[in-house]
Image (cartoon, rainbow, N blue to C red):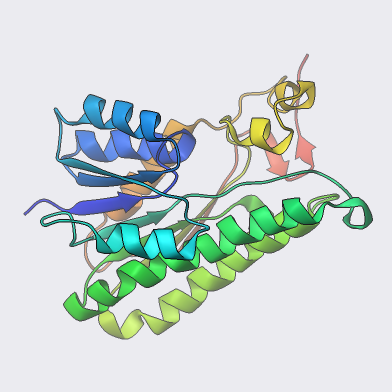
Length: 250
């Protein structure tokens, strides 16, 4: 029987790459995102491989999130794999200069959004006593770097929530995985730096991870035998040793 995966933040980057990877392995998809045109385009591209259903909502909006997931028709309403991928970073300011609207955006999406989506899906998994939840964290959830303050705090929270889920859902046989990438070349930096020239410099001088690299890892995690759970994985590009140590060549 084919499995169904729900992926948040599916319109670009790791979410989109994971959708393509899963589709090519015959996993049916529920793709969630804020950009309807992108969702429609990805749906059209993947329908030759699997069944695809799209949900257009913002994970930071509790009412929208719960309503959207509750509206899923059969057979998409039974979710075997949940990929909590939606996340963002705003600003790179020291704490005393940080903007409250940036803090709110990161907390609302990275933490509360993950919780809202999980709350909508977990009850069906506990009822069936099966399922796999993968939370996409960050190396910023493992350490704190200068001017990373609230972003790092939000990703530390993702890791703590993942560990808490793994404990609480253990009696139900549900797998819970944290995947924590370092520098991945996606739209992420353009959002953080609001598309300015700083964003273009982030990945220059070295080979960053690509979204497809993380999608490969996610598929590896979900394709392990029933008795194997990849609990917590940290992955860097070869050029990166930690958040501030990157070997660059110009």
